[in-house]
Amino acid sequence: MRYDPALPLAVFLGPSLAPATAHALLPANYYPPVRMGDIYRLLASGVETIAIIDGVFHQSTPVWQREILAALEAGIRVVGGASMGALRAAELAPYGMEGIGTIFGWYRDGVLDGDDEVALVHADADLDYRALSEPLVNMRHNLARAHERGLLDTASHDALVRWAKARCFSARSWRGLREAPPWQALPAPAQSALESFLAADLEDLKQIDARAVLAHLRVPAGAPTPLPRAPWSYPGAARTRLQAALGPNGALIDGATLLAAALAGDTTWVEPCLRSARARCYLEDWLTLTGTSPPPTAIARGRTRHLPAAAQPDLAAWCRAHGLTITELEAALATRARADWIMHGEPAALGLDFAAHAALLASGDAAPPARAEAVRDACLADWARRRGIVAPASELAATRSAWCAAHHRDTVAARDATIAPALDTHALAAWLLAQDPGHFGFAQFSADAELLLEIKLDGRHAALVAALATTAADLATARAG
Image 1 (cartoon, rainbow, N blue to C red):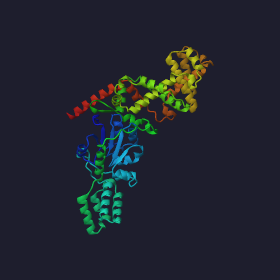
Image 2 (cartoon, helix red, strand yellow):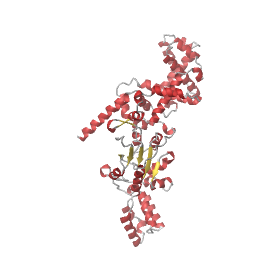
Image 3 (tube, helix red, strand yellow):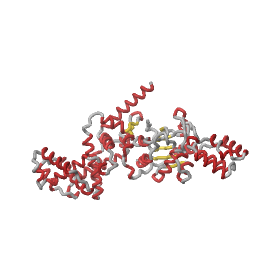
Image 4 (tube, one colour):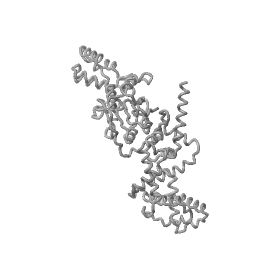
């Protein structure tokens, strides 16, 4: 996929309307029928409106509702109609997706309830996705029109619709309907009149609705209000792999490709990055459990401290180039700011007994980083206690022994009542930070997402995007040659 930011509109289109006709009606970035992951790929491109008309059903995984919700959350306008777009719009209208057209209305109102109603067999892009079967919505629409004109009585109309509904979507056609028992049961004059109607006045309802979607998009709309973060907001493995950064010449470089490139060289940064990410995950939950809220001024200072300098002149452009939505960036900065506030705060204000930790620091490393880590460890130990989490005794003993060796103390010192509680806390925290949060039920934690976020915030990401976009362009040139 490629994306032209000069046209902040993306349309997924296939058999419902000829591409050349669509281009003439509305300039946009046009893509083949949408499939799972396509919305994720565009999520951070800077696109302002996404229109879903056609989508795949059976040949590959259909577009997920979750990725459309992610676009809505990011403040992207999402419009649907005619086919897959009508189906998804009916499902997601309560969350802000706009539905257009008759077919959308049928799904919304419960007239239709199956995705087979809009499914059909079609050719590929080389043949403009030409329809090779007839969608049931078109058959319903035209049989209803025939009934309204008196060409079919109610019983015959209903029998023909039932017969078509009973067929597999790939076997539906007007030719097949003409050979169906309900058609053959019609009197000869009725068959002749219906045949003339279909030959002269057949309407393509999916095309009518597709045109209506494009006409709707020609009317400027106010920017949608970004939805509040919801339970479906977590990154997830698919979104992390597929969400793309906008590179030179409109290339969209997905997260999986970027992460593989980042891990192809030095990997010494990986474990420290994940330990920090795990700590933030647990500390966020600790804040919730204790009802603690950092002051807004602390969050503002932390946000400024962690915001890359390169992002400050044009935040939106920086986010596009780094495969982030502004919502994601703000959430990442806020999480880091909250962790900073905890680690550099006063333990008493956080409700922590820090006397043993102070003694441990005095007997070892009293540098500021060590103190911040001690506060973090005390919070993590309190979090573990509140959650009923206990580390294996063997793990705690090994950490205590390692500390004694590192500080040239014998193991008797580890049992000193002055420092033993803090050393046990340090050992527990070390064990917690070595575990994947999923071990404790945090299914939303994504190691890949955290690693990608790290390279986006520390500056490595931009160089990787440029290099990968150049490689992709070279490969495309070579294929064309």
